[in-house]
Image: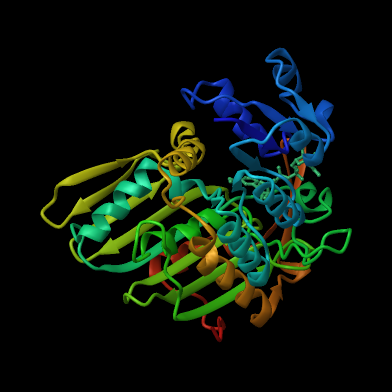
Length: 382
Ligand SMILES: NC(=O)c1ccc[n+]([C@@H]2O[C@H](COP(=O)([O-])OP(=O)(O)OC[C@H]3O[C@@H](n4cnc5c(N)ncnc54)[C@H](O)[C@@H]3O)[C@@H](O)[C@H]2O)c1
């Protein structure tokens, strides 16, 4: 199996780390495409391993045709690069978000079907032991009917997070390409997608909301939003709530509570790396540690399995449509509340400046506990 990685800096470093740390037994990294290789933290390791580095995809495909090409590049490159790789004979694992537009996602699906090449999307939880065994238990009815899934993330970000980027928090990047970047498509995307994924009718599918309401806010001076309170309903009757911000005072790692008829699933990565269910009869079942490097690296090993066994990738184009649609409709239809300057605080932490909205963290916590969104949340037409 020949594997190539496109984009070795930024998040591409995580893929290199999987290989460096031996998390992908039996698999090797055979080529890298990266125009700025000297800037990549793993440049020295890549050189030491004598992994060939190419400036462009065209140069790579002149020399070899990877069985699997991993795309960890900026969002506007996903469509042209995925099309190029599939048309030149490779299966593709593309980082999330696959594309900001539904039409582009459909185009990629068509190319995948026409070329017979698989296209996986790198939402790592959808490939992980933890979530796949939980999903199997949901499908078998062990936990009972899903009733209410909620997630909470308060990831503080310094001002430089947006100020130093030409695409974060923007509708279009500096070159004019559509990115529609927000906290919901980027940092906390995994946790909203996971709700749809676990409620999917089959192992590879995800559930499209039938009702959606949202309150969107921005603490930082960006085009889109860095704060969101989102709730909705899925066709199986499961309600969901996703609360997230980059502009609250306190940092809090992802936590979730998924309530079923017979059990509740808990995960609070602030205190415990293990996701587990507590059943009504009191017994506890541990599913795993979904943020561990081993489980995150399974997006590569399970994509390879899908290629080898000719099965569907755990997360493909259809799987991401509920998340893509939810993000797009919210951005289109919900006005974004700008937190007034008088409610903002500036704080120096570890040499970086952070802005936060006074009282926002407490508000997020309260709504998470109450299981709802602010009253002025807007209903979205789906
Ligand atoms: N799954 C996750 O948890 C996770 C986390 C972070 C980022 N991501 C995703 O990973 C992708 C990359 O994000 P990033 O923050 O690393 O972006 P980035 O802007 O840092 O770019 C990544 C790399 O792509 C390289 N690159 C640029 N143009 C290229 C080209 N034409 N060919 C090959 N390489 C090129 C850049 O030099 C850089 O090294 C995005 O889709 C992002 O959303 C996923």
